[in-house]
Amino acid sequence: MTSPAAGNLYSRYMAARAVHSDHRAACAQCTDNSRCPVGKRLYDSFARLQDAYLTRQHQQRR
Ligand SMILES: [Zn+2]
Image 1 (tube, protein in one colour):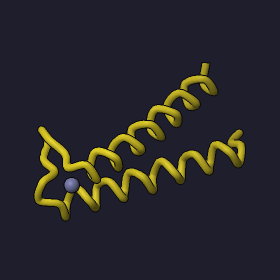
Image 2 (cartoon, protein in one colour; image 1 turned 90 degrees about the vertical axis):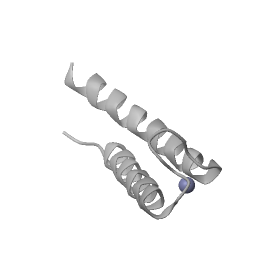
Image 3 (tube, helix red, strand yellow; image 1 turned 120 degrees about the vertical axis):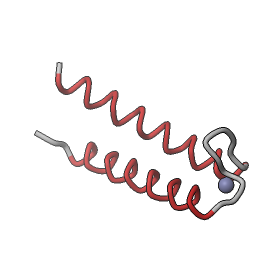
């Protein structure tokens, strides 16, 4: 059973991932080892959403 809130979190997570990977592909300063300030902010919000999403998945499964 999936709640609307979980679906919303998943789409925010997917959107943040797409935004970050687009930036990563277009930005000359972002590499595997370092990120520009914008890339860091995008990565942080992606990581936070991924964390929240995976935590929720884990809690639901038991
Ligand atoms: Zn960048």
